[in-house]
Structure formats: C-alpha cells, structure tokens
Image (cartoon, rainbow, N blue to C red; front, top):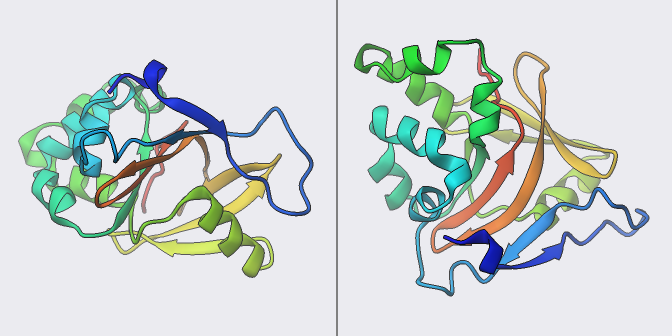
Length: 182
C-alpha cells in the first residue's frame, strides 16, 4: 500500500477541542481500493514489517484474517525498535510463540473502532475508556494533548500516530510504542 497515494484528512476533534497541529492523519478509502482485510493492509505498509513478521511467527495470521470485526493498535517498526536490544529476536523464536501471541493479542480488540468512536467512548466515560484486548488484558484510552493515549498494564503510554486505516474486517491505528501486557 502506498501511503503517499492515499488521501489524508485530519481526525475530527471533539466538540470542546480547539484545532491543533497534533491532529492525527486519517487514511480514507483503503478498503475501497481492493477490499483488503486488516492483515493484508498491515502487510502492505512498510511501517508494519516487524508486526507482520510477529503475527506470522506466533501463528495469528488466519485468526486475524478470519475475525469479522477487529481493531488493531499496530506498533510501528520504530516502536518495536524501542524495546530492549535483542528482545524482538528472542520473541520471534518458535519456543516463545505463546509469549509473542499474548503480546500481539494485547494490541487487538473486538469491534471496528474508529478514532471518532474511541473519542466518544472516552467522552462517555468521563475522560477514559477501557478496552479488553484479545489477550484478556485491558488498555485504557484517554486524551492527552488532543491525542489518543493508550495505557498498558504497566502504566506505560503509547499514542496513536496514524489512524483509521480501514479494512474489510476492521480498523488499524498505528502506535508509537509497544504496549506490554503483564
């Protein structure tokens, strides 16, 4: 997928927010250009090479392709590079597939959640929304400096940097860090 050829629009801000340079770009029309599932879309983005390799290494590709409605909070290659040296290589080993599966599952939630719907859930939750991931762990969504912040089990924050990449079976939002389950 060539992101440069995609139409990019800013995310709609909540009613009480001011216009900000921190608005996250939204990619429109991805699904219409070939009707691809979220795994295929992720595999077509250079920024997702590590994530796609990890999904394949832990055997989750078919599960992701066959889910009818999911949202992937996708750590970028740069996010994986922020992990301790050698950790990603260790996780990719066959004997660590179950650990890797839990890590990847921690970045996926049921349902098709656009950033607008996440913002609405945060607003309805009086400043926070809790999502249960496929791993069974929780991610807490809040707004910080007009950006959606996800907080993991260890109270570490990651932010959505590219949003609303639409597939036939869900949505992808790119993250600046890897969320870590306990």
